[in-house]
Image (cartoon, rainbow, N blue to C red; front, side, top):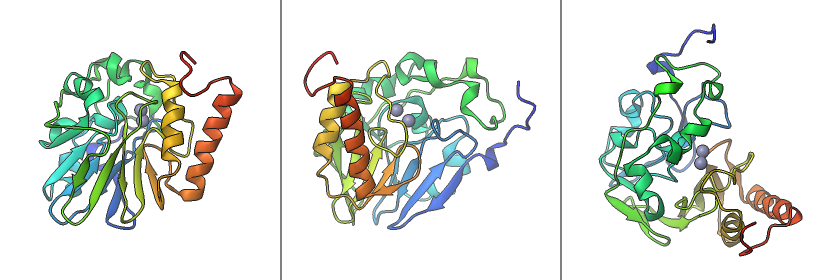
Length: 254
Ligand SMILES: [Zn+2]
Ligand SMILES: [Zn+2]
């Protein structure tokens, strides 16, 4: 057990204002590789929350921003580090391919069984016990498919299905601003394609299709945000690395 003092709930979450009414909410005591970026977007009629973190402390209680107004809560995918507080928000959406996991988030399905350990933290949250960690069920009221729209009144986000990291991964793209909320399919750090339900040919196909999206800024599921040049570099690096390893599109198994 670590000798470092534990972190109490009021010091667990941090919010960082970005451009265009976007706010990053994250958990700074979790190491970057495991630290989920939650994205809050202010809309005229309702707000959007894309992912909800580890779920150890209540997001609603400790981040006033997410309880001020009507809010649509979307899951980028159903790994534990992204859906921990979904149960706190009545209006929930997820891609149909992972609806079952959000409704029944057992540790072997959310990858918590593999990744949720004491090693995640720089400092542990008060009351943390790896052996007792589990996520509360949060069945979604709306299932999303590729091309669907999440409408905030004055701004609209289009659903991009991004299988590869997980089968029901999605990104949200706002054409007007070029903002891409990308989840775990693309971010500026080690991309993960070896979770139990990952699929490398799907991953390659998804990134190839996403490469031509008109993006100005990418807010990923982990690590800092970046622009369109880095976006294409990251995609090209992944594809080149996989091709070098002998993986090709639609050639299964890789
Ligand atoms: Zn993930
Ligand atoms: Zn993640």
